[in-house]
Length: 446
Image 1 (cartoon, one colour):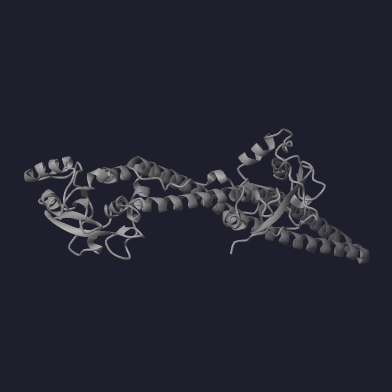
Image 2 (cartoon, rainbow, N blue to C red):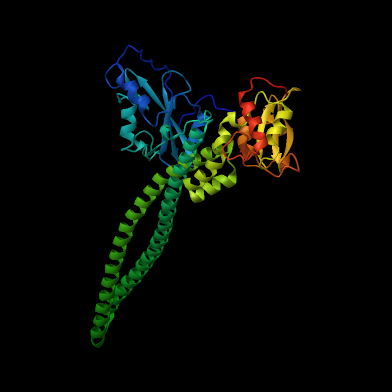
């Protein structure tokens, strides 16, 4: 079930509700409208979305990802949600007297200025557990608009171009991410090996220090003829200890430098990850829209492999399918359909109303006309349940332009290849006059 209230992280809710500024009062930026406009245009401000929607937006995002929405209290407050330790932390942004903040007394003149401040400074000022900055805004501008209005060839072309653009960006960003992640993992292993070596240095240094102390003790107890040998050993131990310390310091310096590089890699990877995830979601959404507009998985895979050239080749075949006037004959009878289709190429088709209700697909198979009922139901158009799912006759035509009719009729081993008034139809001479008459007809029996 959807969450209806916010459980804030580390916030003491005031007993008295803050006063909501009237529209006539000055905005947070000091003028009458500037503060509101600045907030409304901020990429990280999502307005009235639910807590569950926020959870979906932040899913799989790195720590430091954040967005702000209107609070569920509907008292003019806001809710900051930030990812920390792999989970969402909710922080209320309250206001009083034209000032905003997490706890009173509020000090920020606007929500925008609060966000800008904590993008540079850690939230541990507010809560010691939240040692993190607002690093990665979840932008509402990256969300693609719906394309339910796509219904013509030009729009579908744009959809394909958009899909390819997102696909290419996704491949580039994914490769970049994979390369960075591989380097990151290699560096992580190298640093661990160096840390183990540093630990070995510490143990060796400790051992030599113990030996030097032992030599110093032995010198106090040694006979005169043993002093020279003990001093030589003492000098050798000190030289080796110095060499060990020098190597240890060099290794510590190397580790410190590599740690900085490692942290930079980590920041870059965390910055890139939400971009890759967002592109993946966009690509998945566009893939679904292409399927809705008549393309198959095989065609989409071919487009991804060969680019716009592949789409152009397919497009030349199916261009006329988007023009209903090339295949929908509202005043055509069964007899007239048979006269028009006899002797034409396999896959030449038209759709017409039936006198008994619903519609009929008339299609040529080896030059012989065949007829199939298209049912019109509350769920949509189709040849039989449970396949009556196409919202329009055009959607049905676009689907079967790429999918064989064999699943509904074993003898129809063809797709809807050629609209009867399409440019690629080979028409027998005896049929030409019939087609011309049909174009000019205003009525007819079905």
